[in-house]
Image 1: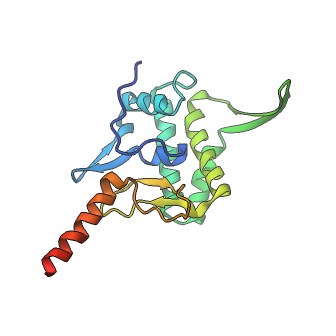
Image 2: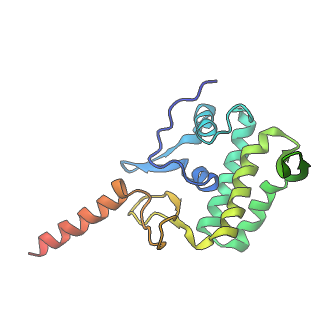
Image 3: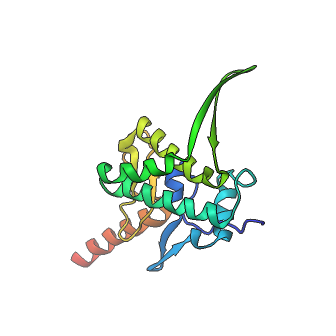
Length: 180
């Protein structure tokens, strides 16, 4: 199956957040890239996972479970989300081994359909380990996107300056001009 172009307004975030960003709001309507296996194929291709993991109904079902778990973790409370994320992580493991090039770690899955879901959940753990305070929700009005703030001073507020950032600035400018 050839992947269609990815229509999302924000791509390129770490895998866990990129999975969350498969749902977004456009012109007041919620869109979902993972509504079908065609969107799944686009997501897998965009994240370098095509070919290694099937773009089938099982993979889609597992990925949706991971997305729900990650949404609970990012937008909810850790105590409620932990069992949901752990349920996804139960389907894979990291295998440590020694290669000619030195130490290596490889993910292993009993069922390859769990691979993308497990990789996204594992990536979330890595983000928490690295800088949990830099996992952010966009401050733009009805925007539901998430990003990992890589700005030097850690003050990024919007998923995209071109979209939500400009809307916020235009709104403030309009409000100031109405006052005058």
